[in-house]
Length: 350
Image 1 (cartoon, rainbow, N blue to C red):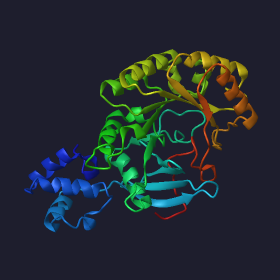
Image 2: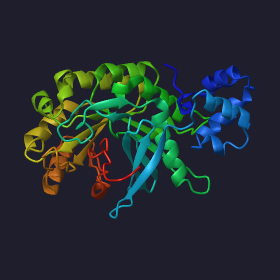
Image 3: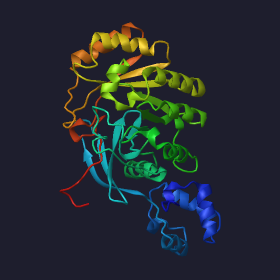
Image 4: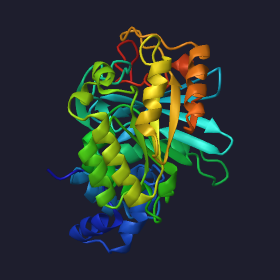
């Protein structure tokens, strides 16, 4: 079925559309520029009303999401955005402000079917995939809200919100193409990270298809037995499968691999786990992010103590492994890693 969301389309696809309604080709570029500014039809001042009316009458609409609520952390200034989709679903995203720029955590699905043991996103299962324009719409909307003096409001993107990006492969790839288009937002491909549970065939395919975001692997365990307890996807892909896939990705793209490791008290934070993890990544061009586990009440898992996390880091460093402890941001607004979900807003009228 043809998408009626204009933000799903490249300039070339918009050119075909405007020609179809008997408009000159250059109107596509104007339309594309307005779409990347988050404009509604009413805001597209240099485009004839007759053309916009024709698009509207045919069922086309410019934007697929709108910001309906902002929650600002009192701890670090992180902003969590609640977006409403046209079908009424609510998704979330988080803007984290650093000295080097503003990083937006972007969702790729409504819900998630990976159901990792520590994550809120999978509590309701997968509702549906987001289209390329809906993924892009999050960036466009937040960029518009935070741009100052023509400086970007969003400088970096992490596909780490709700959903497994590689489970929505085609739409995510189109998003990567759209967001880096020099005629649109023109975001550097090196400023985009993609977090995956380790869908190995899709990691390989991404490299073969010419995409090269920073590949971030949600590992969270140093052996297959433990990983299967934490992450159901591990029943399909072993850690050795993941290592083989990321080696291929590195050889193809030259991009260093990032491994994410959420620290769960009494589970994956022991000295033995640190030694096993060091063996797993030994010889890889990689970096490990240790993530203090963020509380999700429905999951019932406790995070490791600060002492244990830094002891674990020291053990990895002794093995020559590049490792840091990720700074947790937005925890007071449920905007930290693992806390984003398909929000059901029963008590507020949106």
